[in-house]
Every structure is written in structure tokens, then in C-alpha cells.
Image 1 (cartoon, rainbow, N blue to C red):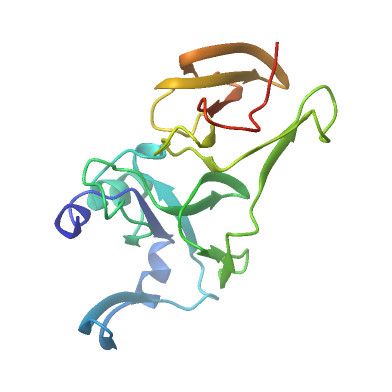
Image 2: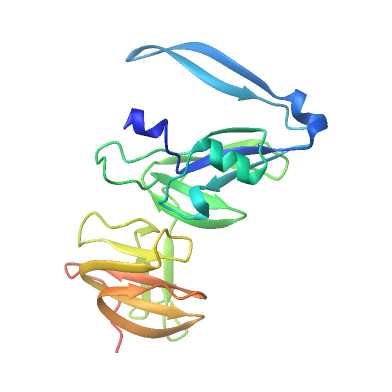
Length: 221
């Protein structure tokens, strides 16, 4: 996966800034010692007070798609870019990001990785645990049992039928197909369909997908 990660990128951090501030960026390299030996780290150094915007961007603006680093930087007008997340190292066919991704205050992906880095409004960085992130909801105007529900992950194809996953329009494919899964289709604030094995993410809604072994799956009729 190391070789492929050098060619295709899922999420990157872009440095968007006027030409006058370009010279405030410096590309650096440093040798660091790890348990696996010495490694050379390439990084970009910048000052948060400079007139630039630092923000994450998805490949093709979708979760789970791929695009070259050069292409992503060019179409967004960035003067510098670095990888922001990586492929699943244990499955070469799984081209989905790992970790939590939030853009403009909205979660777009959640799975894997106990810690994420955040970019504050003043361009400073903040590291925080993702273990406290919860995806919860309710039906019939209530979020207490038996009307409450929860999901494990967001916009990430399930690895087992025991998972509950929320899919939004940010996912790479609006047509979902997971044999054995039940799909709760929500348009606006209303459940509009309950489907088996496959479903389509509505333009102004989301889909809750869960497998048959899920003990506390939401039950609607």
C-alpha cells in the first residue's frame, strides 16, 4: 500500500493563499528515529499568521474516491499540498480513508484512528480523541428507547454484517449495495423507504444501513 499511496490520494491538506504569501512556506526534511529505524520526514513549514487558508479536500470531492495529488492541488488552486489520510493498510482493494474527517464543522467520514488533527479558525492545529464522537438519532420526535438509534461509522463500507453505518451524499457512490443489509432511507427529516440489499442515498437526506445480526437495530414499519 505504500507504493499506491504515493500515486493516489484520498484526502489532502491544501495551503490556499495569495501569491504574496507563497514565500512564507518552506519545504523541510528531517531525520527522525522510530522503533522501526531512522526515517526521513518531508514537511511544509508555515506561520499561522500568514494570509493563507489551510483546509482538507477529498479526492473528486467524495469520500472513498481517488485522485492524484497533483490534480487535487491544481483544481483547487493550492500552492502546497500534503497527504491528510491513508488507505486501509490491510486490504489493497479497500480504497477508503481511515480516521475521522470533518470539513467546515460537518463530519463526512468516521472510522478507525483514535486521534484526529483539527484546524481552528486561527489556523492553529488541535489534536483530539475521536472515541467521544457519537452518531445518535431518534424517530417520532423522541431519542429515548424504543425510538432512539445509533450508528458505528459514517460513509465507510461495512466490513461485517454486524455494523450500523450512516451514508450521506458525500459518499463516493450514491447507489449502495450490501447483500443482507437493511437500509433506512431518510429524505429531509422523514423516513421515506425501508429497503433490503440495496438503496440510493437521496439528494437531501441520508441512509442508515445495518446487517441482520444487529441486535438493537432500529425497527420501523
